[in-house]
Length: 265
Ligand code: NI
Image 1 (cartoon, rainbow, N blue to C red):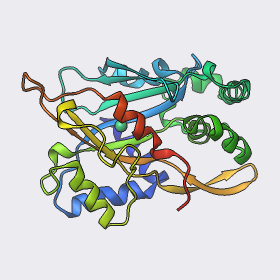
Image 2 (image 1 turned 180 degrees about the vertical axis):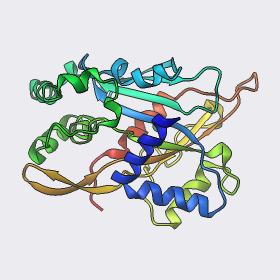
Image 3 (image 1 turned 60 degrees about the vertical axis):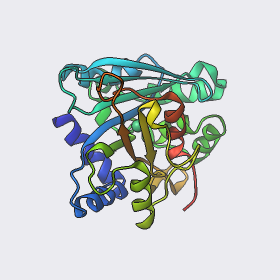
Image 4 (image 1 turned 90 degrees about the vertical axis):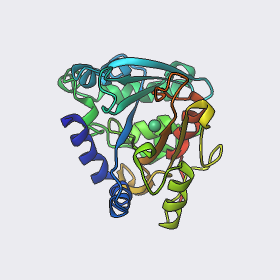
């Protein structure tokens, strides 16, 4: 699907680490199949989940799941193409900004106000990144005190936050733990919040992810290196009817969100 090709191009250009990881799998003779991609946004009705979902609804996607992350003050929906299990799932979350400080709310409002009307109406925000707002490093750090998620969206805006390798299709690495060991042997960091493998076979979904690649960003105050996007790995198990589970586990996703938490290399 053209949408995914375009998003992949932006994702790998911004964060070369994910292309390297993809290449490592190809070199091992693996076929890399995309389980899902994810986007982040704020709950402002001009840019919320329903707005970012537009390009996918046009491609025949329908909403299949709704998730609440109380501690992180997020909600999310996931979308699928019903008659095409090969189409990658799309997971879109948004921050519930009313549950945060007036500073965060005002910062988000000002941020959205910078987006020109034609871009808001274009239905292709997901490709745009954040060209309208040069971020301030001071504001980034102040947002981080309340929400790492808010700080991340403030800098990166609209782009695939991660792509996800379907472990079900891998031959040499049948378990998520095998993928983690392989990536660690290549020098990549695995998100270990809540354990390196999130979820269990009985929950029908196991996941892991890299820690986001560190990249240089031009802030108002100068250049600083911060975590960008990451790569995720997912293994799905069949339910009692023999159908592969297609949803998400909020408890696991909650920890996966932390793959973009600030860290120094
Ligand atoms: Ni994910």
